[in-house]
Image 1 (cartoon, rainbow, N blue to C red):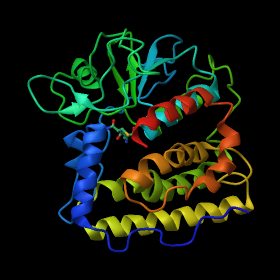
Image 2 (image 1 turned 90 degrees about the horizontal axis):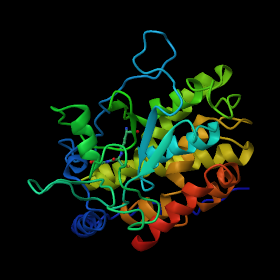
Image 3 (image 1 turned 45 degrees about the vertical axis):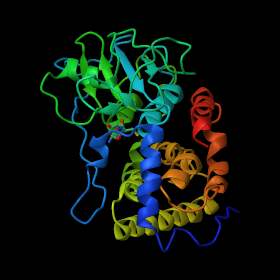
Image 4 (image 1 turned 120 degrees about the vertical axis):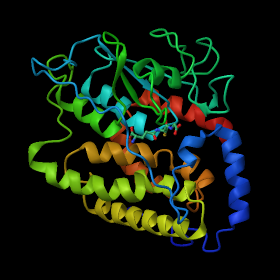
Length: 323
Ligand SMILES: N[C@@H](CCC(=O)N[C@@H](CS)C(=O)NCC(=O)O)C(=O)O
């Protein structure tokens, strides 16, 4: 039986000045880019903007992006849950030989002398930060430079994950929910585990419905808690987050996976957020007590431990300095 701790689930008297201080501290810690923080509505709520590069890999003969082995590269940060979804899929589908990947440094840094923007950067050497590698493909110093190679007039955020086409030297897609669907189906001729289908036809409707509330309240919910600039939207996001965690707990006390008896995309999407909950969300996004979600995770870890062991260990390594 799973058991989340009872309230306090969030700080009912959320101190805005403390928040500013802590948030500033968090900004210092991770060097957060302003572009994310600027995504704030008039009410002070965080409103995420949509991803920009939305091309699809497809075996359609007219597709500019066919599923070829060795052609694509995935840029990730181990600190990022969205990127980690994609990394989990590379492992689960057995695509790590067909699609290369590399990770940036886990903490934002200045990307150019000419402005203050801080974002994801590559290390200068293999040994600078565990798990992070210089960009051998394009010689870029930052993820920002990749976006600038792909589109000279680009004005959006410089986010990971980035699925990069080595042949056309451009970004195929930077939206994790779409990248994982491509990894699930489009590379089955070259995947080592083509029979694993995390979005099976008979569960599509249930997975879509589950993704919707988990995205809104948990995946994006932790950001809504952390990036809110006013008390009210923070409280509302916290309330929704813990309601959704209760719903997960309830479901997982009756069934092994979030959509029933089969591992699906919805479990992967939930897991990569929950595994960061203590370190990222509870401490820096002010969403309540840490250790709250470990009982939930204990149920999900055995599913992933063999599949994403390398990523998980690296995640812990990069998480350590911030604890
Ligand atoms: N909707 C995107 C979100 C990606 C995203 O927000 N990534 C964050 C890291 S967790 C990022 O790279 N942020 C950089 C920035 O905002 O400048 C996806 O799911 O792929």
